[in-house]
Length: 474
Image (cartoon, rainbow, N blue to C red; front, side):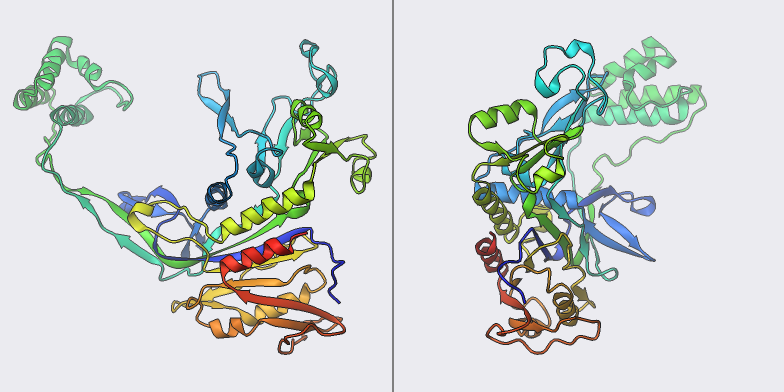
């Protein structure tokens, strides 16, 4: 039977966003006939395009929402490396999971040149693990929070087009003059066109004195004089081009958007929060920071404790650190994350499309394994989202021995087409042992069965589900 002894090591979940008339993650401009259309990110599913939001994008929304909701200190990205041309080629946050919860949950990476190789002799001032002969070590923390794409339930019937135009009554004469010169150069110039080269310098190909006249006409806003000079030169060079006839023609502003519902799955490795591995040539906590935090009493070394003693070969491969008061802090950080997820906000083009991305369905459960089990629990046939009740019952039966908490189902009233069926899931489900593909769960009961294996399902709102998970975290 499911007992209180079952250890919670992970929290898995899924959520659904109502994205009606939405554009949450852009892919730039379309191609071919759509080259003037701003399009959302999509992937191919056979013949169909499916819109999605990248995991990087929605995890950034979640980070920002949690920072705002919980008042977390911000691990602001900053430049830490530059290439030979002086351009930024490396960025990182604070690389400090002790004082910055977002670094603890979402991870970070500062790759190190020569990683895994022995340090050269010029590093002799360094102490301890950074001494001569020690390996160069990169600072990396893989994110304990794993997440999928936020993917549309619909592969057809989702597309909409917002045809917009900016109507103008004025133009910039200097910009128009430069545009006329570029139109002249395109068919007439013998030099290869270089958009980065100054357009007035390009004119000197036809003579510096003449180029100076053209530049003077542009500076004095004498557009007719400029056009005459260009026209005469074009005739001389046997070139052909047309001047801009309508300098205030409407500017198209077209955006493709979607009408759909987006789903994602995630899994938080709860056991890793507040625990930092400095093992091998990848370390999670810089040695200088580790020394300071040890001295300040913010972390403790637990290399010699179980289970890390075995994992590090009793310290031979590295050191393990843990936050002091780590159990309380990891619970607080994880709870902040899930409560922020329930009120998630963010997304591209919000001024134009204004989409509420707070989940309309949020499902959470503690597990003793790292499987993101709540996958593909929804479908949409074009008339609205449906919850796959039979799939859900099969899932909790299969994973009954791995589910360490009640399964929390948070739904917004009036959203799911089969809402009454979902609300009917609430209660205790007795799971026969052993389970098989033919196992059929009976109706739930209000009380936990006195014997055998059972899973509790609680149905509430998304915000209430997140609050209940906070109470269930150890």
